Image (cartoon, rainbow, N blue to C red; front, side):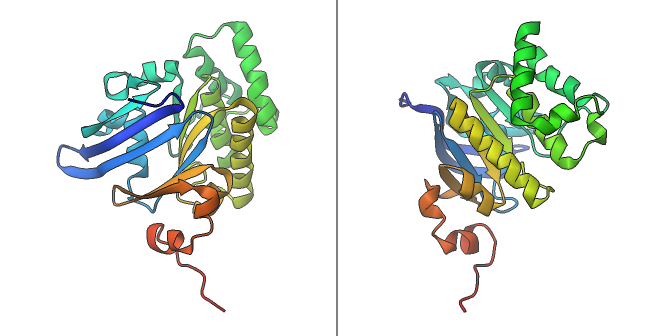
Length: 254
């Protein structure tokens, strides 16, 4: 039985692609209400597969959950359509800064609210909220999203998700391809959302340094297996995380 403070629970999840390629091997993790959790690992570790399983988007990539269970606030994810999960508050932001390039920044944002059937007053209030967190988007609101920078496109994708009023925001590699200063700004904003509004966040990230700086707990994946989990304040002190689990070289001793 899921504990009341647990918003998302994965239990011993197995997943494959094309009923042949094993991708996840018994992954178990939990996201508690009001926390920010990082999913860490090198390329190919299974981070994206985990997030797609959580959002029930694996079937779109010919993927299947072959074992275990995933529950979002007590609801069986595998038996719930992705669009219904969004309406319930589980909102994904996929890897690759997906925006409608031929729409303006503001039009992109509005699609997130329209999809949940928001009223005009709600749309206006939610736009104001997004612009308060991302002032840069307000300055660029009439610019075609395809003509904005990579950082602005990522902010637009996150802002559009916020327009859906998530209770759990699921982000896949938000730092990919962005300058370090932009990455820091995005993660600071995510942390601010968490602290001000209690928004729960699950973020898959290869950049372990920034992820461990702005999250409460982390789960490390290696070859589709959860090999380590703990509080980030403790994991930050462990050099073996970078050298063994994330494919990075630990600094040499002087």
